Each structure stands twice: as structure tokens, then as C-alpha cells.
Length: 130
Image 1 (cartoon, helix red, strand yellow):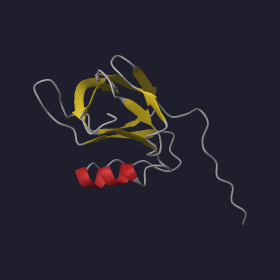
Image 2: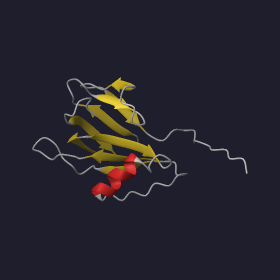
Image 3: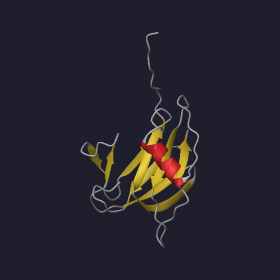
């Protein structure tokens, strides 16, 4: 997203589809992480995306996409299993990537930089003493 309250501008490519976006950013989560912010976006935007806690997939949700002559809003949510999600920054400056809502711990994401996201080869395992 954009570090300030300006719109994030980027190109999104998923499952053979691609479009330019202007939005409040993008949330990516696994099934175990899709119960907080991602769920809030799903419910507010009426984007039903089933993503199981143990499923080998990640979901993505676009926050407040804005349609214009240069941007579209068809790729608002989806599930990534095999093919990665590719995001290319279209922000001259101030673009950031951060995790778990901690904006101070960010990676700069300015014009032309790309990030490729897909499920990890190793799964999260929780051990519980019963």
C-alpha cells in the first residue's frame, strides 16, 4: 500500500488475469490468518472466499478498489494455490509492504518493484499439550 493516506497504485496478476489498480492496498493471508483484517474486508465488501485453516493456499483481498479510465476493479479477491500472485508497484514513492499491521517494519515498494506471493512449501504447525 501507500505509506500516507494516498491511494496505492499497482498492477495485479493472478491466475492468468491482470489489471491496474488504485486502492487502499491489498491484504494477503493464509487460512489461519484470514480471521482478522481479511475477514473484515470480506464482510464489508461482500466477497465470500472460502479458505480453510489447513488448506495449502493463500487468499488476497483488495481494500476499497477505485475504478477509473486507467484502473479496473474486477480482481478484488482470489485464492492462490499454484500460480503466484504478482504485484508490480506503480507508485513513484511511498509504496510499502508490511506484515501483521506493523507499518514501521516495512519493505519499500516504489515504481517498478515486484513482489510474488504464494503458499509456502512448509506449513505452520501448532503443537498443543492435551
